[in-house]
Image (cartoon, rainbow, N blue to C red; front, side, top):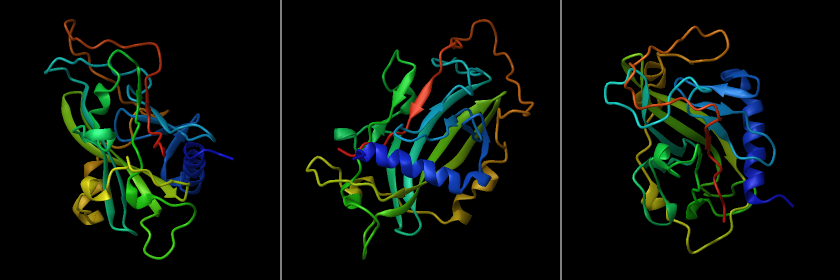
Length: 234
């Protein structure tokens, strides 16, 4: 029997296939309007993403005037069907990892960032939603606040998932109330305007990074830097 984590990975894989035409995909990677490049979900693995555009961006720390840098990556789980908009990470850490701290600052010294986020109590259950359940179709919304060649951007990229995996009751689960935010309409979010920078660094894209100077603190690593969005159901 698959674990809850494995079931979620399978759901992500199916959702990615179903909506693949909306994504820019190459060699098993999904390119976004920003430096994050998602690895297409595979069975039994968490969703992962390279936060350096496959090695093009130096890792922090950055100089304040660096031409290229990531200020923050925030993540939310929202659904227009249920009306829920839950914080995964907005830069503020809370007890029991209900809301994670800044993603780029997780696990200092490690090139791999893990998102050990517990499913909240309103998503407890197993299988498809019934009645007034909050389970069902959601989006993992990835918000990137970054500077590209001297210009600042804030972009929005959504990855669809279907919350039907088994999430057992646990007294350590955070309440959905403490993670809830107002849900905005697509018109209020205006992702199209936010994402005018377009999908970056995909094959065929001519975007190149301007040098920030010899004294820049950042340094490019050869090893892959991964942001794992494995939403853990304990």
